Length: 68
Figure 1 (spheres, rainbow, N blue to C red):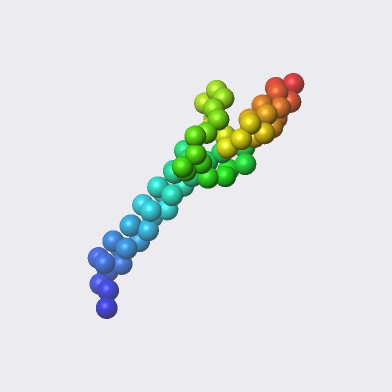
Figure 2 (spheres, rainbow, N blue to C red):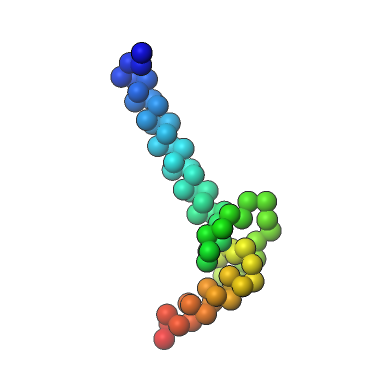
């Protein structure tokens, strides 16, 4: 049986894992389609990382239309 301290520790560990999972997703995913970039050499433009040149182009076009 788990005591209150063990339950709190388990919840804290889970929250930390969820935080780092989201953080990794932010830094290791395509800026346009959000696909996982782990193990790939990403394409880069400005401060963004992409999985393909198609994603670079789509994001560039989207940003250009938002500026008008």
